Every structure is written in C-alpha cells, then in structure tokens.
Amino acid sequence: MPTVDQQRTVALVTLGCTRNEVDSEELAGRLADGGWTLVENVDEADVAVVNTCGFIEQAKKDSIDVILEASEAKETGRTQAVVAVGCLAQRYGTELAAELPEADAVLGFDSYADMSAQLTAILEGDRPAAPTPGDRRHLLPLTPVARQEASAAVAIPGHGGRATHTPSDLPEGLAPASGPRVVRRRLEQRPWAPLKIASGCDRRCSFCAIPMFRGAFLSRHPDDVVAEAEWLGRHGARELFLVSENSTSYGKDLGDLGALDALLPRLVAVDGVDWVRVSYLQPAEVRPQLLDAMAATAGVVPWYDLSFQHSSPSVLRRMRRFGGS
Image 1 (cartoon, one colour):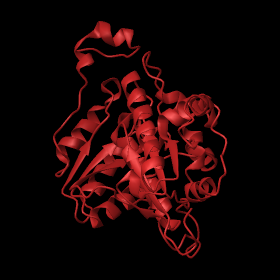
Image 2 (tube, helix red, strand yellow):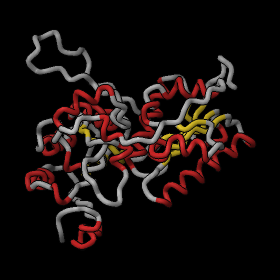
Image 3 (cartoon, helix red, strand yellow):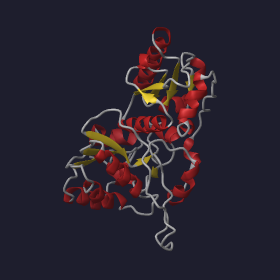
Image 4 (cartoon, helix red, strand yellow):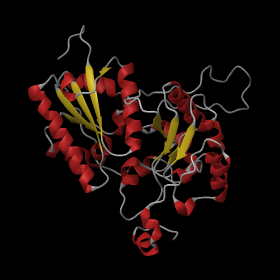
C-alpha cells in the first residue's frame, strides 16, 4: 500500500458508449480532486477502475474479460485492487460480486460522488458492499417536471457538479457568487469530446434494460451544459458531441420542449468550439422546430444519426417503438 508520502495512482479503463466516456472523465475529475494521480496503464496503478458496459451480451463478456485481465496485474505489476463500476456493476451488483471474486469491489452509481474515499478504503482492506440490483426508475417522480428538484438526492453519473439554480426573481445579491462547477478531467486529448445533456430514458423498448439501471429521463440544466462546454473548449475540444439516452426528450422535465433548440446557439457560441453534433435523436419524438434549429444554426453539424431499424415498421413494432420509414 502507498505510504502517506507516496502518490496514489489509478487507471480508468472505459468500455461501452460515449456516455460512459463522460462518466469516466467525471470519475477522473473526482479522483484527481481527491489527490489521485491518473495513469494510463493498469500495471502502473495502485487501483484499476473498470467502467463496464452491461447493454448486450458481447459487451458484458468484454467487461468481464477486461476485469479478469486487469486482475492479472495484481500478480505482475503494481496493482493492488481492481474495482468494477459502470452499467454492468450497477445492473448486476451483488450477483457480479459473487461470481467474479477477481474484482476487489463492485461499486454502483451511488458510490461515484465519494469514489476517492471508496478507493482509499479498498486499499486499506475494506470491501464495500456491492449494490443490490433494482429499478432506478423509481428514484425519481413519474411526472417529468417534478424530477429536477427531486434529483438532488439521486446519483446521476455524468451530470458533474450540479449547481443549485437560483430563481431569477431573487433580490440582487442573493444569487450564487459562482456558476456551475465542472467536475471532469479529459482522459484523451482528441479534438472532439462527448458532452452529456441528459441521462436515463422513459421509453420502454422491448430489447433494452437501460432505463432500469440508468433510471428515468433527466435533463441537465442548460447552464450546467454550457459551463461544461466552455470548460471543454478551454481544454482543446473543437467539436462537441451531444450525448444522452434520448436527446429529443431534452427539456421535457424542465418545462420546455424547445430547450434543445435554444441550447444549440449557446453551445456554438462557446470560445474554441467550432462544431456541435447532436446524437441519440428518437425519430418518433423529433419536432420540426428542432430540425429547423439544427439547420439554421451555423456550427451545428448537418448530421442525423438514424438507426437502420427505422427502415422497417415491423421491426420497430417488435422493438416496441413507434414511427415508420
């Protein structure tokens, strides 16, 4: 175990989608703030954190293989502990911990905020309890507009340092002195970066378990999104790739279905950012006004990611999705 005078090191291994990349960079920011040194190679780290994917069978297998591979560094390298986080860890929790003793800990989303303390305790021999699998949709109210206030008590990965947004009618001098705090550390110095605008999903597609372990749909406040965009612009990101489970739902819990339309001009105006790309649009929910905003806003990439299954109405019905070709 590192002494007080030695720097604790941690390697983050990310699997799955770009949303998971955002979560890993948020974890990296929290760990760096907690005094950890981030390293690229697992065998150079005191702790290897594997941010897993739990969507499809191949992704689950890949996640388990990477955990097993990382555990080998405990025999050959500096590594003293391997910790599983992410969707597979949240989805299967106690079951994964029982079946995979090579992982020294399986931590769910509720552990993200104090990840630094969690890893320190693990190095000292603690073995925290894995999360019990459950349906996280029930953590937020059924009514979307009631979720923002309730979300303060719920762990939402990738939503960073959420600010308490002060009503505009408060007397001058009572507003917060500073804006949203960005909790993130870039792990790859690419000219583009994913930017999470929302988490969770309210749809009930027949093939998808994501809403169960990611929870109900929740938009990030526009000011939080812009603050993180400005941070990314200062850290070399020239293109922002907007990600979520369903970007067309953005704003419904903010009481503004046109929130994404209004957000796009603010993002393309950020210093250092040249392009903004919108992804994860659900065709059945796309409004003409959003398409107009995308087409009319200089700097928004003229790009629409349409999944191949939308060419077949019969496939869509089996997926429990609406719309057609």
